[in-house]
Image (cartoon, rainbow, N blue to C red; front, side, top):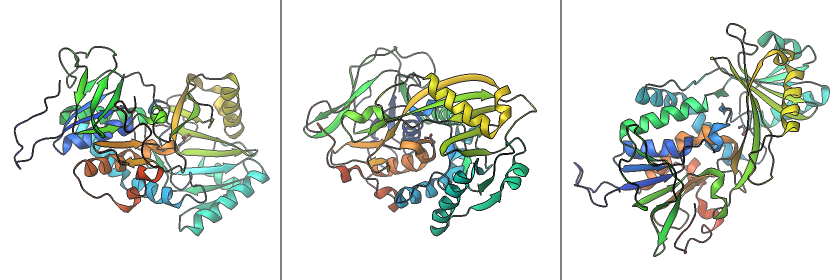
Length: 405
Ligand code: GLY
């Protein structure tokens, strides 16, 4: 059990006990940052890879993912993108693990005239907000990416939208956290609220803690008391905070060594449908993704895989020759305004870190910085302040003993 008292730190303050619920990239980053700042941190997650981090393609794409009317989200994502290289390097140095960060840029391409007009409209919006994007002819697109189909008739080059490998990033965050003292419990948990404040996390079973260093030894306690609970369970928080699962299906392919069909992220419009292809240095090619409002549903459907591969092949015919490695469906945590929920709402002791929708990987670092600051009573930067969950009112059932699992 996490003891409730600890000798004072060098500065004289008692170290805080923090439990982070949810071990995807957001939860793992929060746990690491909190441990770096001297908190005793336990990370509670069943370790099944059931969250959105497992499926994420890792695009760091504030410009390419821009939607009109979402200027607050753009400002937040731009801040995160500006700091991502340093964040990835820090994770790499602290963990000894490569994160797969690639400053490779993103090429958006159009397959027909309607798609090209849509890209041109998107460029107008991007430029009206001062964002850098270049218009390319079809020939220029193929010069940049020779495996593109001759039918590609135009594109937009966004030099500042990069990528990272989310699975490697997560492994690095967990390793960095373990080195900083984060202990892991493989279990589900639920936040316990007493007298109107978060008091800890009740464990709901799971595997007994294993041998790897950093895991809690011995018998699992029923409840982990905490000064601060961080809720980072992604779309699973849906019963109590306003997030909803947005299903995304992805396909993973493998490019042959020495025969990579793409050098940079390619986002395609294929007769008004969207598809993206994210090539990694190790030869993985992620093709995604559907966006389906259908509740929690991790089934992969034949139709979605068919559509993704059909559209990917329309852009890059050589995709047909690649090895099919994996198909996967996970739920993004969407919020009503597409901004994440970062902050306490009005439940003392509770910090929400969810609702990151399509940008969880990109926003993991800025979210963790903000959560660590808030846990220490500090202000957050303006781009994060607008993400205070209080904009949606109290988390539902916040006055009950058990808040959320
Ligand atoms: N950010 C890409 C996706 O959510 O599919």
